[in-house]
Length: 273
Ligand code: NAI
Image (tube, rainbow, N blue to C red):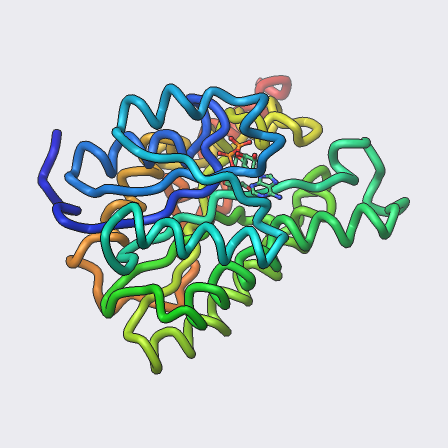
């Protein structure tokens, strides 16, 4: 269903790798809602992914950018304004990667070069993106910037490893930069803390099948899908949420406020019956 929520709005969408990506679903939905955008991803991901199909489908252009490189981001923002014909109304940062997770290094046995790379890609890239947008005065007033997070920023999920720290850092950057973006440019900045979702990044986390199943049973409404996350993101890009800023918004079917559910209790009491 389309509500024309984003008619006339222009944006940049980071992180669509394949059709499972949260950014991919978001791009499809933004297109349906009348928004126009530039797609971007790391040059290496572009060779692996199928982003061209998404670009064709949504009538968008692709500009490669490594989100850890300020010069790539500067080029991205300048070109996006040229292509889209004006300043930007919305930005989705949908980027995460931990080398320690990829290599299977335990949290108590980190390689700190990998740790540094992980926080640069997953958190500081968000600061870099916003700083470039801010310095170039590239955002329209009442624009909206969203990054995606996970609840391991607040609570322990042992196998989430250093991504937990990266997400805590990301959420803090959203608040800190959001203050200045709000004061100086009337732009809002939020993070959405999403349910576990079967994507390339999600499935890279050890024990993913276990904790997606657990979260499904714990959440009164069940896990939120990538498409549902896209829909929630659209509301934050729309004019209906202009005064929502500096927030970390849980989009998790109620998981984050549930102590225990009937289904989880039953799994532990079966043997006693
Ligand atoms: P995904 O694997 O489809 O997307 C991650 C993206 O990050 C990829 O497109 C990848 O190319 C991009 N990326 C990595 N390094 C980059 C760099 N240097 N420059 C630019 N882009 C780079 O996976 P997903 O799940 O759609 O991830 C999107 C966001 O959602 C991430 O921030 C992730 O942490 C977050 N998230 C995912 C959850 C899940 O369970 N899948 C749960 C909660 C949050």
